[in-house]
Amino acid sequence: MTQTLNDILLNPAKRPTVVADLNELVGQEVSDKSGVSGAAVKLGYATVTKIKPGVVPAAVDKMLPGFTEALDPFYQEYRASGGTDFGAFLASRPEQAAEALLSVTDDRAEYSSSDALKKAYSKLRPNARKNVEEALPRLGSLIDKHAR
Image (cartoon, rainbow, N blue to C red; front, side, top):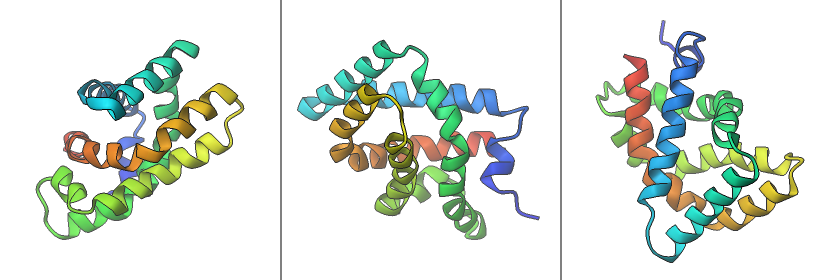
């Protein structure tokens, strides 16, 4: 029986480490941004984390089930193909994988009770797909790490 990403990443024994690793990945991705759009991402991230410290790991943990559900079809296709690098697999489908993940964050932002978070997200969203696409190789590698 093939395991789903829910089985792998939401396993209570692994979930805290998965969330910590994803939080670190977000920080790395933000840190790697450059240029004007990178400055906007860094400012938005700093603003959100200043307004509500701990919001990123809490949001990652809360949205993790949605993320695993959104990525599971890609993961199942990857496994069926005999792939060895989920990061490369996701990067070969950047638009579809990014939009699947962003559908989760879009829903979360829409129903947030924080106007400040909604405002920050609305400013970041126009460039979000590009940023998520850039993160796909690291994200896939992280998932591979936890799937072993």
